[in-house]
Image (tube, rainbow, N blue to C red):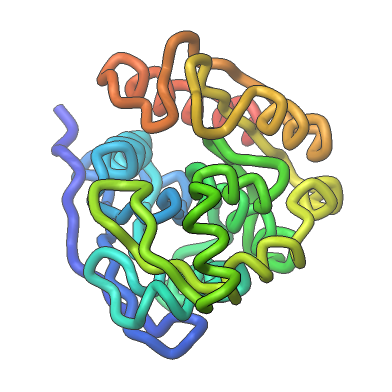
Length: 257
């Protein structure tokens, strides 16, 4: 019987200069290593979110050396979230991909969840070291994230430069620069330019990123679209997250062969 995947702590310098915390999930002994993967978590989440952990362990169990990291200002990483934008997220993804290459692992599969998926697509369009892209419950437009903020919070951010908002388990500070930067990136255009295999996974009961967003992203990237019925945005139900991992691994097997 193959041994279970193992994890080890990993650190690298992000695009904005902060030290970023990561976990490297290694396939267990007896499991053939078939590739490397880089995992980008959702907006205001972390590498330790159950969704991210389940994907990482599932990919490692399938033979992928998988690096899951915390974006600048989140989780165990350094820096301030209030100083980040989509552009800095893209830089963090790029730095993580470089760290994998420097560690002898690459080219890599790039997997992103929600806004992390949008950042993954945007970064992949600029990186030659990405072989495949998987976007999980990800929007075709990063400006779509604005609907998560109340009108009061948006007004305060515009007038005062920043505001605390509650999206995940705890309040986070979002800046005017973050909002402004949302409109400088076109995820659909980046997806159309990839010229690499792409999978878009849609959560059937997603109330955060709507069906029109994931379908638009899949269409733009000429991607395979798979819907997991009744799954919420975070794939909270274990059966849904297990199906998510199985879907990714099955798709990878089909595009590798």
